[in-house]
Length: 272
Ligand code: C2E
Ligand code: MG
Ligand code: MG
Ligand code: MG
Image (cartoon, rainbow, N blue to C red):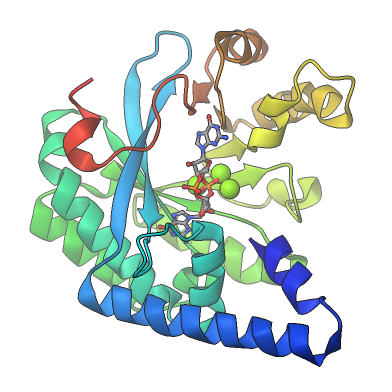
């Protein structure tokens, strides 16, 4: 997402830049309209305990099709909403819609947890936690049925992130550090973030058999997470041998990926 934006803005020359700015503006305008009209949709992907494949919860993932019916990459439109300052509205839409679609199913399954991706701007928004509490109350769900995934994108975000995470935990929510091991997520900061688990980025699952850096780093990250008493959710599991590999590294690990289920609309989640 960011890479694509960077590539476009880096396209040297005035033409490239103005094309890019025009494209972004138009995308931003259409996204605002879609949000306003409730035209964004949600899909949900299973999260399972690797040891017995028990469904422990789902991650909510936002989808947007523009007027032509073409899906826009969520990493692109989320970045746009963050930069344009309306990610708070997007996140509230996600919370509201997700609870509307899944509250009954969640109530019927004790321990079932829904996780939602949030931005650092949600954490610094003073109205966010009261909003979440009111939504949960309206649906009759406890705070621990809703977890949040956060990504550390820069060291500058570390302080607000750490404080925001603590508040979520104090309110009874679980917090997961998303895409762990990529970009700016840093080992030295991990110890003072009050999180429940890390979500190991898909790159580590993808390159398991290659003689690559990520293949040698994955076991170290798993060991470190365990050493810190953190849980582990492995992203992007597409094949049995990947599940087996991580189960062996950590018998208590959780997993997510196409092997267990692709993201689907709420009405298809429990039919399999
Ligand atoms: P993420 O939170 O790391 O979500 C996991 C991404 O991996 C999802 O991409 C999911 O569809 C994809 N995935 C899951 N299993 C597999 C697999 O086995 N193989 C492969 N190749 N991919 C798999 P998606 O839905 O395109 O979302 C991309 C990112 O956009 C998310 O990454 C998250 O950072 C962001 N995003 C999505 N929905 C929301 C939202 O509601 N709010 C916010 N703030 N960000 C969101
Ligand atoms: Mg996530
Ligand atoms: Mg992730
Ligand atoms: Mg991601």
